[in-house]
Length: 104
Image (tube, helix red, strand yellow):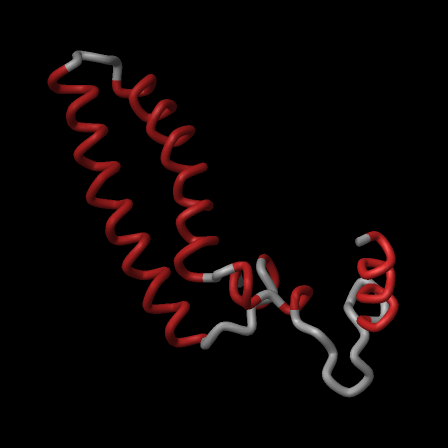
């Protein structure tokens, strides 16, 4: 789902699957340890520990998956269309380069 719909990645499917699996496994170990520390050592209520854990590591998990499993430089929107050298934003590469050269 992330490969095709969330990030539209062109990165190798099996490499991204392997990296996502390793990221999720690492997060599982870290969040379990963190939850244990909050409930057993810091004596926080388990519902509050769950909320903190979900908020902190849910966001971190998204960032790690984005940077490790689906690197942004492999997104389809950053790739140039080779046959007519047009960016996906609709701006021709030559037009963009000439505009940038005029400003310098």
